[in-house]
Length: 487
Image (cartoon, rainbow, N blue to C red; front, side):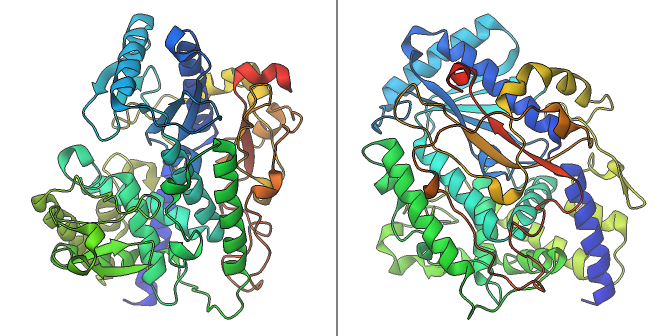
């Protein structure tokens, strides 16, 4: 592939990123959904004392403008970790389902009781955000934080995940309900690609956390999360400060082209090999007793919940479709005759393309994740900001952003900080009042990344470069309304 071709692919990928990366109002919209759900949950007798905690791509900062919102209702509220049984989870979700239906403002309510993790699914009105509610999904929360920390190692990880998700949706291979890949599996494929490219960008995840994380989620939740965070912080710092490592300087276009090339024959490789991000390599399924018996066409091991297969929903025919999507995309990307239109057709969904015209990007709003509308969503979101000011705090740089975990006592303020929010205007920052930092029981437990990369390296330390290359940013902190009095 010629350098000139890479240039066209690079610019097109960056334009797609501009459209799909969340804007300020996308964050505010999700905060508001969380707050509204919290009010419903706290009104129910069987949920008294429970907390409403987001997780998934929203917490890991790997969601697009039309991304789903995953929420866990924690009955433990930060105390001892307990495993509520499936029967109890179903009963509680049924009660919540009834309450949401009676209250109104939520549509497409669906209880998925027989899933591996029982879910309550719905779509919000009028924003059209798809939400998945589960009970006591503490494992999901810690996995989300781990992906957030990985993004802090190299900012290209986030960009690649967003681009791969959009590409997968364009080729109809990002829907576990139809037998293709879920978004978590796609994120693991990007991690695996970053581990196996030359030189490697990420290490095998066993070097960041040597154990099986779900096995260590025992006892007091605050202590378990602190231990995991401390281990990860130390190992990430060690990896980033290793001066013997050769830095990978690949551009987004080079990484994306090599990604689809790597998985062109995934349907053939998967007959004998599984993907293991924990060890950072392909592994022979027959030689790995944890993965036997082989009864799924594709095996992607969850590095945080071994030996769970995150690709267990993939069907044989759909695996062939995944392989074919990689092949056709690779052919388009390496063709010497590609145009912006042909690249957009290969990389993005049809309703994304009209917002990229002659290198100029406009910002759509969304409706149900499928039909883009022309009316601005920022209007109501902007009006909502004054009432929600107590929930946000502007911090000065990406290096200040931390995930602060809850204290086991109810009187301690709970804080969730989320990184990398694009401002819809330069005045957004002034709209948010600074609130006093919440007291944390162990701020030292959060990953702090040293400035170890040379200035010439394209991905410098978080303190040196903005994560978003195209817009000014503010970081926002979410504080549940119930804890406002504790400030």
